[in-house]
Length: 344
Image (cartoon, rainbow, N blue to C red; front, side, top):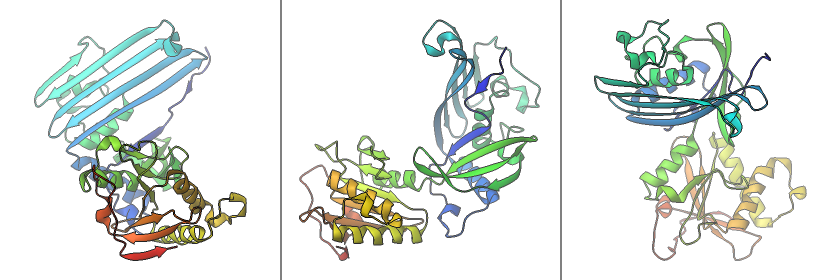
């Protein structure tokens, strides 16, 4: 039998849906600071939901695929569901599927099917069948040990990591993430952790400025913007176009280039210097969408909102307006009162 190829090997993606404090500093955080912050954030979550997939393929069309969903509500409500498909059904053909559901509400625990053979090699809390059902599910063990370390003790992967080193930042799905390499029980492991200023900003639009969740998005179709808000009836073009930078220096540089390009109206990428390429992509995205507002977001509480004037397009002018202009309004198009000239 050929050695299986695994599409999801020693790689764990953790997405923290709050502001990442150490990521908001000008200096780069250490690997230890990042891991400690992730542990703190998960330990304080009031609720959590995730879903994932993995694929082990032995040869084309034959292998094992898994999909799972986890739901948690503090203090002790869990639901975990996993479907494992064996054989050719990886590509829609016949195969065998095993489904497992683990449920917990306070002291009550249920596991289906009850006859599932569980690994009990590890010492788990109280010999619980619910807890034991995760003994061979590495990804979920990590998440649940962070959410409830008192219940899933002995499963803390983050606490068992050694020789952690912070590599150069990379992107997952177009969003910047920390990349940490280290060892777990002597085996190499890669850990990706996203600072998620983008996700925190989306949450601000919903919670602070009243935007319905179904009108918000991340990563525009042509990758010009990190986040967007759409205002009916124009659901194909952005009303708010947002860009996130991890440092104040990067944010200031972006705005300086964007203002300069707006003054010239240059649309030919070949005539733009390499340092201005990122800002040029924003310029083209704004010309495409005619978004009334551009939101530039940095670390901490650093952000600036600009009203855009398209009357001389492709030349654009940017006028800084109060953050209250980000507020959702379902009525006629609001009129902005510029408070400062941001560029133009």
